[in-house]
Image (cartoon, one colour):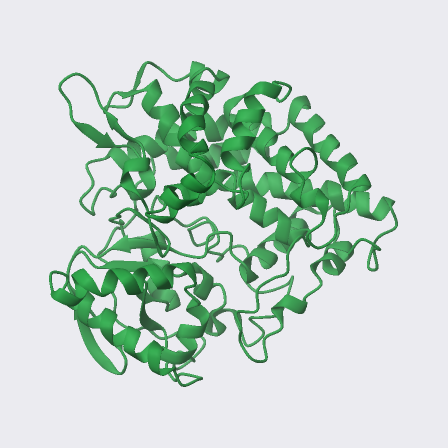
Amino acid sequence: KLKARTAQVQVEITMAPANSKPFLASPTKNEDNDENVYFTPSRKPSFSESISQRIQISALQRPNGLIANTILPIVSFIEQANPLLVKKREAFGPNFCNSGTVVLSEWDQVEQILTTTPQARTFRLGTGFLNAKRLPMMVGGEGQSKRNVWFLSLDQRGAGGDGMHEAVRSVFIRYFTVKALERQNDSTARALLDQLVEDYKVMDHGLGGAFFRNSKRGFLPFVIKYIHYCLYGIDPSDKKKFQTLYGFYFGNIASKAAPYYLTLIGDLFNLAHCCKFNRLLPKVVEIYVDSPAMAEVPEEVTSFKLSKYEVAHMTIPIMSIAATLGPRDMIQYAMGADKLPNHNTPGVHTDKIDVCSIWDGINLDDRDEVVKYIYEVNRLRPPVGHSHHVAVEDFTVKILGKDRTFPKGTVILIPISLTMLDKNKWGSDVHEFNLDRRNLVDESMIFHSVGNMTNGRMCPGKEFGLNMSVQVVTECGKARRQMGETNAGFLN
């Protein structure tokens, strides 16, 4: 099974979008319904919501106008902190504006952009704005100007890209992901997992318990050690290195480094921690450059002649924004560390779902059942709520009951949090837990793909993160049963 999964990852190294075609923004019908159930809004928007929509529509249609350059940045900044996309879909239907983007949430539209259409990108993280100066914009060699090697913001071939996205992505998969799949089943990774299980047995692992929050032992130190050992081959017993790595990624009030890369918020975040990120970043680069994984990277790699320093530097925001957060969130919600969100929607009680009771009832010796459990938990709360792409041509969609045309260059949100809670696709019980949900794994979008169908933008660490999640959920689940905590554990 490991060889098969490794081969699948290796195939994706050279994968290009198959049957690439331009993105179509026109409304579509669902295969099981005559009409999208969201075409008729289920609630009346507030006055401020309506005004916000009209401001954003006007500004996005005229990107060089006065509103776009004065009011839109303020509206976008306010909305990026609390997008509440589910609530907006209830008020405005499947198409609306949010945080200075156009949101198109119909299943067919999102499926197309994830599987067949090359994506153009900009410096965005979901609804937030990334600070390009903090991302790896490296000098490419003598006489060359700085070049962007942050592959989440690079355009794909077919959408204006020159191949840098594909090159940088292939390096990450070849020298990090493939090796990680091998290391995560060796004795060192197993020892880290065994220690995690022992910590689980003796620490409070209920809702918000110390097992999930402690910086010295338990889940967070495990995440940093396990991921860095598997991806980079860094010795987990090197206390000095892991003190630096933990300090950079989790040693802050947010327990994550992602805010450091956001515009304005990142500056405030860094100042609040006495500029520790600026101090630790060069040390993290040095640790990565000296790692066993980097020893296998040539001095110059790909036709773009990426240097080792560039490769090491480009992995840091990936670790900050994705690799240390995606698996962590997937596992924590599957283990009941936090309540599932109910999106402030009347009649929806997702936050009341007792995932631990469900966890206690699944067959932990059946990998497929454990995988389905993890997928269903993360369907209800995707590890990545939304990403984006940039329109490569003008497009027209219906918003607020009228056809609206937006120009090339408009940012379009990819609302995974909405598609995974789409009644048209998943049924009327979309806000309930159903382990036997039809096509749960094969059509899930939680890894920025549709199952294994991808246009080349699928999470490069999908198999690694899923394996890690299965390992932790399985072994800690067995520990729960040995402790006699199933169904009514005193720590839940």
